[in-house]
Image (tube, rainbow, N blue to C red; front, side, top):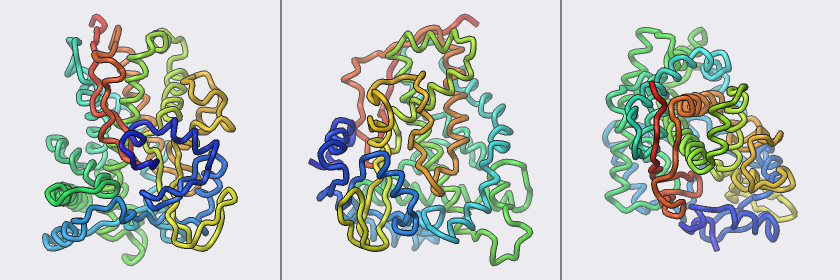
Length: 416
């Protein structure tokens, strides 16, 4: 068995439970990597940035055979061949420098300043299906909300969000799935389109600081010598990574939250009627992140011979930190396979990683998910799945990204 098996990628929890019990640090021959599945081992490995590098690479076993050809095509068109190490997938001083330069754009204060705009975008999207009936909540709500929020924040054109969405998917797909030649070149075209959008937004913000997230990133370190400021390649990479992280993962979290409400009417009613709605929605969102973990795993690379959980790990080995498995570890979470918004340990989840590489956009993602759910429960009278649960499609899931392909529901809206 392998975590790359489509059936396991779509629903990895039974497999992860078996590994935690029988082989918690497991060599996956197909992936060409070690899987670390217990919470404590995951945290210890993630925080040991000297021995386990975050400079992300793609295993040749899941890399498209046409990737080199597609990369040459990108460079021939005058675009950057971006690598995760051009943004935050680096270690040490370079990671500290980049993160320090842009972290102010993602602080609690900066995110709070965006709250009204995020809420407005949620209201606008909810209004597109104000009559209720049968709706695909993934395509009609879970996808456009984070897409509109991140495009708005980064100064990307809101009338071109479909192209941005395709580019976000291509960035992830290029790193985690083998593609045929046509698909590899389509991913390349999508990525180049995103780079063009980013270039235009960056140039506009260089001329005029507009107070938005992209302006703050572009003008970060403006008082530093030019050689210490972010380069154009770094800026475009950071914008691109923000798109990929701000669209796919947040989309999937919102979709999982909506799926939970559609299948647990008592929980939906509780959130609707709660006298402390903000607290309950926050708890609900944290438990959604723990229970579903939209990014199931991410890799590290061993910089020296070492060991994890008694297993010898050779230098240069690829090591996947299985966040989704850690979030269901019974040694950390009591009754981990039960969705419970009253558990007191939900916020200890690893959905955003841990340590110095904790997701920079975690606060923004939380704010978006809470805003989307708040608007939904206060606008909708009732919701139920329009298909059997077993018919829901997870077929586009990858080792590093798991989500629904659609979420058809029947809605009854509250009276205006």
